[in-house]
Length: 152
Image 1 (tube, one colour):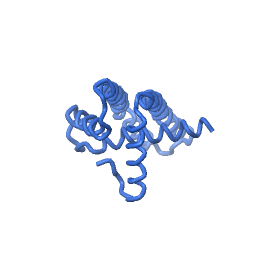
Image 2 (image 1 turned 60 degrees about the vertical axis):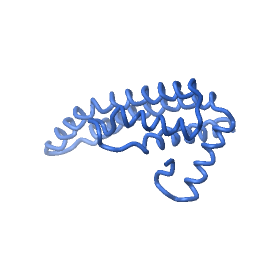
Image 3 (image 1 turned 30 degrees about the horizontal axis):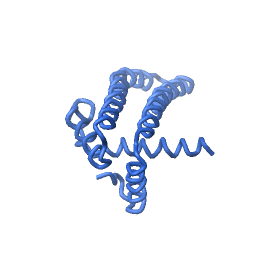
Image 4 (image 1 turned 90 degrees about the vertical axis):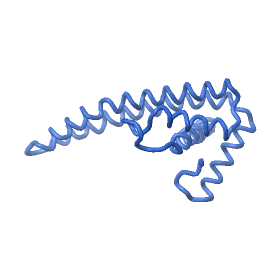
């Protein structure tokens, strides 16, 4: 029961952060968004939840840590793409090589998800019940509207 609640909490907080970042303009910087867009997303989440300065600083730190990890994943993207191009150029493709490439990518993403979930759960513990209710209401409104990005 507790793990189910934890998973729901992780999903909720992930949606909160992703929703705030999704509100940013896309394709401004070399990795899809720049520092200004990140700060705009943080400010949007902070204003929607009426965060205190301490909570906003924590959110800012979390967002920057996640962004840095995401950028680190982007840096190895060109290497992965070149490896894929080399595999495609071969006369035949070995299933084990493809499985290994996919497995490596899944492992990278799993590490990112684990890191983000730990940080977001810690952030959740600093929220007031009113702030948690605002997030819950946003999620319910988003589900009812059926729109793709409802945190605007």
